[in-house]
Length: 435
Ligand code: C2O
Ligand code: CU
Ligand code: CU
Image (cartoon, rainbow, N blue to C red; front, side):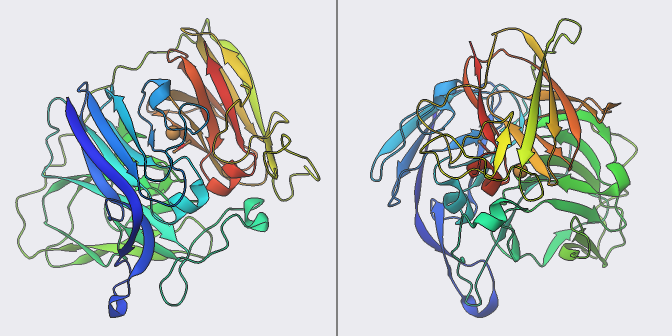
């Protein structure tokens, strides 16, 4: 079995180039983002995580369908890793694709101070591209001297869009340019590991083709309006054929928030094309072994997202002793990061198919994430979703209703929460039990 070791500890990172200012961060193996783990589909791995922080932590392997005891939710699936202690995670990734890992303890600070890394599960057969790139995109709220601003868990932000930062990094540094060659075909794996920032990426003069969402292959398609929407925790794999002119630069723009568009980076072409573009052969990734839900026999469930600013939840309280709640799912609020004895909102029968309608009754965007399973995204506001999309984190626009479906094949207590971390910790979280 492959054995990997990682340690979470305080570190210094050079994120903003100016005057060699080091930012104090919390990091895996001293790196921002943490080391990219490259695993192989169907091959067991053992990952020992050492906690050299001053507080409890855990690691959650976001999107990997693994045994419940390896899911990294403190109190719910494992005891927290105390300072100075280690925990051994062991699992066999069933699906190839783009995933990531992050703590599930004191998430606002631990994720917001830098603990996150990319996790790639390689296909059995290599996919025919010239290069396979990973962009881990994160935003930070930095002070004028390039340090992480305090004020995590601000109540006003928790009831609105969450802690959105002022600096976006690509693989841990403020990006300038990405060198490319005319004619090459690149598989670009996009990961948004921000606490709260939603991104909408456009590749000037290029036509990205989406080939996988949250690690799960879909029918290759160009994104709606040419823009790739990436909420916190979401991943999109695209194939980019470099059909620009040698020697030129093309902007990559994030224009998700109205009036706040900015240039993320540029694709800068070298002078020599490597060959003529071969964009006529589409790339289709091999499907993962996901159980197909039986829609005719499926049991139906409804989850209603409530609260937030303008959400009329007023003085609604969370469970006693679990902190302040401004959001709720079906009238109940679990807050924080995970707790011992969280009662499940629903008990699902192992092996059964479910169709769950999630109804966003709030005025805010929510990337809703379910642990332990991937689900089909069936419809939005009653309209069928094309391209056979599977996901583990589905973006919900204000007032939107999204229907998802899955086979409840993985037993255990699984978190379901918004991945805008302020929303999660302020009540937009629950537990589904599969038994
Ligand atoms: Cu990345 Cu509980 O999630
Ligand atoms: Cu997860
Ligand atoms: Cu949310």
